[in-house]
Length: 512
Ligand code: PHE
Image (cartoon, rainbow, N blue to C red; front, side, top):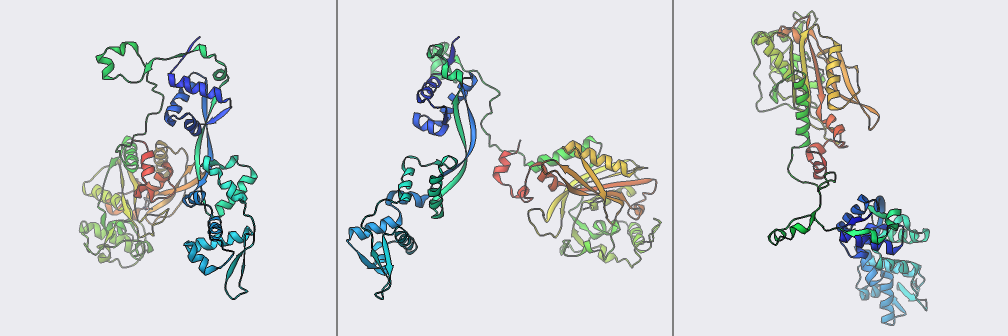
């Protein structure tokens, strides 16, 4: 049976056989055969398709001279350059100062050279005459081992560190200490022939008259009929496209949106500039609560004062703080100050937006069930580092319904994480001033084998829901989860800032 190969591939095959080695480093081979690397690899791929050959990939530490090293390869190491100056000028002794001037070298390099001249026992140094002088003490100055080794880089500018002998490694280490070396991690392709590739008779291999492109010439002079068109291999990866695309965070947000929509939720949004009333007071957070302090919350100068909702609702919230109102609670038992509630803040959580939805529920005389979510920006006075942002996003939601329980809450949160790709979640007891019971939510992250904290949840306390007419057995299940934490896991980013600094390499790697 004959095997059909492209002309170029046949040539590569013949050359590989001629060299009579078992493996060939692709980049060296391309150089030896004087063909383009890409063309060589496409020939190798053709050999692979016909089971005649193939390639393996290997990570190597490639060592080469840096710019300074290359310079010394041409002009000699500084000690040799200095020696040549002495020999050319027939100098047997000279003061260091004069020598420095004569050498026209920079001072640092000069002294490096001097110290190696001493190490090589070419010169001695003495201050006996009062002057700091050097004396030529050797008669002959054969090449040092290091100099001899350096010359290797002339025909082989790139060495594979793992393939060097112990002795060679020592020389490399010395060059490295003298900072003349650079090391680079590289993936090397190793080409090989299979038994079939080595043994198939050349008479069984035929040249394939295939073209990958039809040219207008072929059509006008009608030669196209003689050619066979190379079939497309739809399994081969195409070239990397660097077109514009959605930011991964937008894609993720849209995915989350779709999950909640598919579960029957409606999206809500609320203002970024919020009143302390909705951000804190309506959440039964006492006015001296530490989370309200400047070090956690951004307060605004402009606008400085927020509008509050209906007077009677403000009164109802005030009552829950002072004595529990009609919620059955004793309240916090202090004098509630409306001016504090009018302060403007950058909302510290989207739970503020959720409460606005409760206010709407009251106003519009809504009936349960109500299921809403929001994916929106919040702000906290945090020091920004690899795991904290001062501006981030919460995935928030509530279910208002009769007789709903903690089990329903766990069910919805589990379902959400399952749909986004995390099978296992765990809930642990937590605390928030506005929920009882409260749960922290963590997901299991396979790659690290760890449980990672994702956010909080719980059932709103009567103190939170009663002012809006939501009373037992109607309850509000609520959660607030971190978007960026989730994004870090999904995009495998170690630094949370990457999500917004936008390293171009990462953005290119992410799918469309
Ligand atoms: N608002 C809480 C936070 O920002 C999360 C949460 C929302 C907790 C709803 C309970 C209920 O961490």
